[in-house]
Length: 118
Image (cartoon, rainbow, N blue to C red):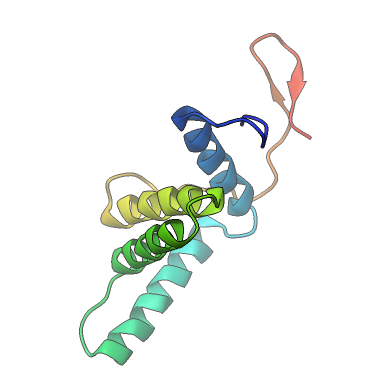
């Protein structure tokens, strides 16, 4: 992503969101992430007395990030996390698979043949 003192472009933000999902996927693997949202939905269903789904929870969290971005428009995290919550909502709808990495990725060979990664 662009340096902190530079203005990132939309593509930079999407790349950053992608990198965060993959980095956090190591800690929150697919089964666990899905389970967390389903458990939150089950609790919300009991509290509200009406059916709440994992997608609903993701959409609510995206709304929270929208509200935070209004209160703190200079905080990049609010926008990036909001994009990721919308991506999770799409996964929970079945539009795309929820396939986050579950272990640290191996070093990858770049097109030039150089190793990348940590």
